[in-house]
Structures are given as C-alpha cells and as structure tokens.
Length: 296
Image 1: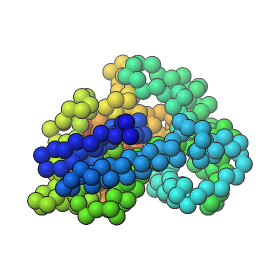
Image 2: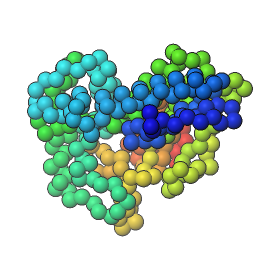
Image 3: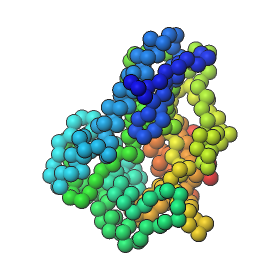
Image 4: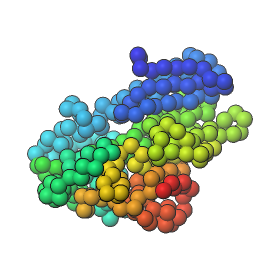
C-alpha cells in the first residue's frame, strides 16, 4: 500500500501508516523484512477494516445504517453486538457520563482553540436527542429513535489496537508494540528482557515529550487529554470532554491522563472515565487500583 512504510531500525523493524485519522506505528522485533512486511500488512488491513466498519464518516457501513434507520430495528452482527454490549456496560458504569449517543453535541461544540462558546439554547436542543436510555438494545437488534446517532469514537481506536494485537499474536512470537494514535499495546518483553520505552506527550506541545517516559513490557497504555481540542474564554479552558447529562465540558479535568491496563480497551475507558470525574480524576484512578500518570 502506498501509505504503508517499513524501515529497519537498530534492532527492530518499524512500520508506519495512517488510519482512523491517526498516525499508526508497529514496532517489530523480527529478524527479516519479509516477516516484518507480512505483520505490517496484517496490522494495516485490520486497522483499515475497523475504520471502514465503524466510522461515522462513511455512508456504507453499519453505523450509517443505524443512524439513518429512523426508529426501525436494525440487526447487527456479533462484532457490532459485542461493542454495543460494551458501550452499554460503560454507560451503566459511568452513571450515564459515557454515552455513545452524545456525538450529536459536536454540532454545538467546535474545539478549535478559539473562544467561541455555543449558544445554550443549541446545547439544550441537542441534548434532547442524547441518551443511551432512549435506545432499545435487545441483542442482536438495535432501535435508535429518529434524530439520534451513535458514535463509537470513544472506544473504536482502543478496540482496533486490541483486535490487531490479537491477530498478530497468532502470527508471531516476537515482541511487538502496536501504536494507533498514542493508544498502544505490547505483546511481551523484548529478547533482552526489557520493555519498549514510550513517552507521554506534553499537553501543550503535541509530539514533544512531557518528560515522563514509561517502559512497558506487556499490556497497554491509553491516553485521554485536551492537548489539541479545547476552547479558551476569559481565562477558562474548556476541555473537549463533554458531560452528556449537561451538554457542557467537564470542569477541572486534567490536561491528560494515561492509564496502564491489561488491554487497550480497558486502559482507554479508565482514562476517559477519570477525565469525566474532573477534579476527582486522581481519586477515581486510585480507587480502580491501576497504574496511571496524570498531568494538570
């Protein structure tokens, strides 16, 4: 593929491509280019498959079919059903603060670094069409009321990391690092016994290290933050982390939260839920007994 690039580093192979509007990398501790190319192609194909299947920007997939169903039941396959079950679990766990129907609020909020806050009336109007409780989910059928939408953006990238990791584990015993837009997983320690070293981005300088480096031998890391998506008005920074129960950004969120967990989906939801707790992010993470790094 034209946008899949592979190069040899000192003691591993590196593949780069773009998927899900994010830069993606695959680091592979394999011996030769042939194996590296096969693994990279597998990762590329899986990331692109998930993007095609679950992106809300397409008009030829199940998400579009559900969002244009006008209240008619839509039957979904097992993969989509599992994701909807997970979204329902996250909704219940978060007491309604993680809601895959909240994407409609993007029509009001444009987190472009400006000071343009939306009209309260618009937020309130959109909020009438936001609530997972209004959706009828009876596996394998979902019935979405007319005017509502679902958006799996809050779990899609992390799911893609885990799905790709599981596929690659079946193809090689080599140590791998799968990184999709900063959400990543490592299969196991490297030959030396060491892990892969990664750095947490500085909240104000995307692509620059915050000075926090992490060695990861196994498991996953996921980060949630407002480095690139925010509004700033009258000295108040409005994060892109929205509370769907109010339609407004959560107050006093950390600049970024990074969580280490067994898989990327788990790490991602814990990072997101901690942000939804605002000033209580650290207390929430402590309660979950997970390793995390919080930048304010």
